Length: 420
Ligand SMILES: C[S@@+](CC[C@H](N)C(=O)[O-])C[C@H]1O[C@@H](n2cnc3c(N)ncnc32)[C@H](O)[C@@H]1O
Image (cartoon, rainbow, N blue to C red; front, side, top):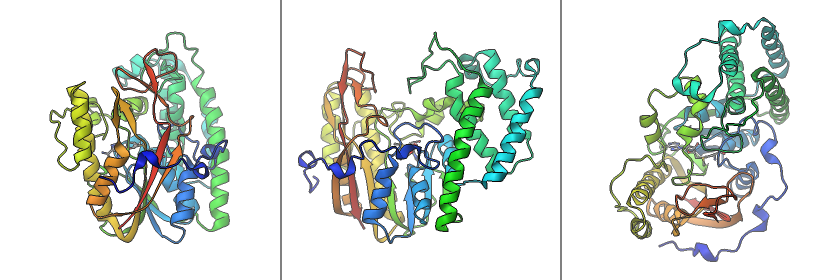
C-alpha cells in the first residue's frame, strides 16, 4: 500500500494555474491533443524539482509538451509514443524553422492554390474511411494540399510543419462533430473551405514558430538536442541510466481511443495499415482483448479489478491489462533513470461503474516496487478545458452535461515525484 494517503492530501492552489493560457504559448497550440499537459505544470516541475538536471524524458510524449518545455529550458530531451501522429506533432513543435524561410515557403505554397482544378482530384482513391468522413469537394482539396506539400521543394522540417497544419484542420473540414473527441458524424455541420482553414491555421502556426524560434535563439537553446521515437513505453531503446528526469502522464484507462481519435490523419498519412492491430498497441484501450482479471503485481490493483469484475468482466479485464502495462512501464522508467534521477508522473483517478479506479495509488505502488522513493505527492485541480470531467456512469466513457447518466470525475489529479 502507498505510504501516502492520497485521499487526504490537500489540493495545492500553487499548482492550479487558473486563467493561465500557456497552452497557446510558443508551439504548444499547433495541434489539439486529448489529455495534453498544461505546459505550466511541466515548467513548474522543471523549475522547482529539477533546475540543474540535464536530460529529460517523456515515455508518453503525446504532442510533446514535456519536450517543448525541456528545450525552452535548455535541457536535452527524448520522448517516445506509440502514436505516429504524436510523433509528427512533437517533431514539428520541437523543431522551429527560420522564420523568413518559413514565410517564403508558405507564400510559395499558397501561390499554388490558384491553379487548383477540382476535376483533377475529385476521383482520388484514398481509403473508404476517408470517404466516410469527407464530402468529395473537401476531400479533393485536402488531397491537393497533401500533394502540393509533398511535391514542393521544401526540406523535411518544412514539409512536416505543413503536414501538422493539414492534420489539425482535418477534423474541421470533415463531417466529424466538432465539439466531440469521439468519432461521430455531425449531420448538420457547416464545413469550412479547406484552403481557407489551412491559411488561417498556418498563419497562426507561423506566428508561434517565430515566437519559439526567437525565444530559443535569445536563450542560446536553438540546437539543444531533442528526439522523439515511435516506440512502446514498455520497451524503449533509451539507454539504461541515461535520463535524469522523467516527466510524463500516462493514458487514462478506457477513456480515449487515440487510434480512433487520430484516424483522419492516420488514414491520410498511411499510418494505419490495420486498425484492429493498431488499436491494441495503445495502453488503456478498451480493445486490449485481455481475458484475464489477474493483477499479480499489486494487491490494490487486484482489489479494484475484482470489484469491477462484479459489474463488467470485459471492463475489469481491460483495467487489469492497464495496471499490468503500468507495471511494465514503471520498470522501464527505473531502467532508463540515472542514479538519483527523478520520475514525475501526472495522473488522475477516476470512477468506472461506481468503482473508484485508483490509478495514481497503483502506479505509485509499482514505482516503489521497482525501486523508487517518494519525494512529493501534490494534488492539483484539473484544468477544465484540457480534460473532460464528466463520465457516463453506465459505459464509463467521457461524457457531456446533457447526458442523463453523466457523473463528475477527475476533479483533481496528482503529481507524483519519486527518486531512484
Ligand atoms: C495522456 S497522453 C500524453 C499527453 C502528453 N502529456 C502531452 O502533453 O501531449 C498519453 C499518450 O500515451 C500514448 N500511448 C498509449 N499507449 C502507449 C504505448 N504503449 N507506448 C507509448 N505511448 C503510448 C498515447 O498515444 C498518448 O499520446
